[in-house]
Length: 347
Image: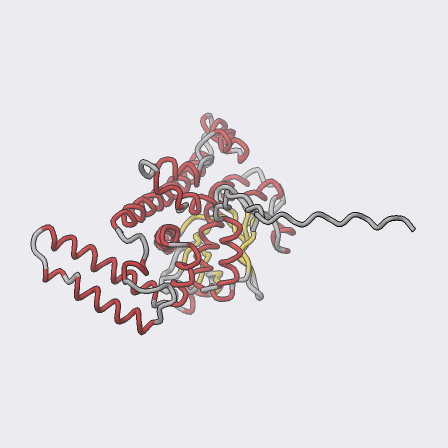
């Protein structure tokens, strides 16, 4: 996936250098994720022109615009919830005095599961809330919860890999973002069946109603689904009307018109709103209301699939592309290279 500014919002919010900031600005975070959804850049998608046309029309277009604005409001609510989750994660980090799960359990970074278990029981006995009274009891409750979370993270091979790769700040924040996105996607979001190139005078209303679809994550977090109606417990008959792919089979999530299906049928003017979820057997081709929402869904969905698949190779690629680059330049070698010997004298 190409490097884009919208995808850096998670990385930027988890940079260790931010610890010295005065506080977390939720509004700034929201602008960094969906910075252009509600301003004049939307003129490119034709929404402003459609709104002006609808103001003096008695057709169904005003209803279509109203539906589109509701979709925008729903996506903005999802980003606000994510911003609150990131803010809560930062406050959680501030309460962790040790600043590291290994130091919290008093073990070395190469500790085995047996050593972690012994350290966990030792620290839980030390910070058991029943040993304290008053305000100290509340502090003990917080500390015991931190110890339990540290033990749960470090004894899970996948979570420990992420923790060692990113550090505690990025790990805690990214985990919060993934869980927040799962909650959003289980509820479902509006997408559109990719439009045909054939001209129709009702194409705007057609895209809003006839081709409108719901995209959602199954409650077991194993399938991505697209249908006219969301069904969390579909029977055999309902499954015939649902397009679904198994998350474990996903190999790529592409932006733009990249699949054969979209190349044949999608509108070229909507390329910045299209994305495809690819498996070896089939693809899910989606169209989002605008580019910013496509960027948001692509970035978070990629992160979600990586975590559900526990795909280390894909995570390493994602991490290298989106995490902040080190600002430190290369260290110069203190030992100067020996000067080249003079050329031999001519014979």
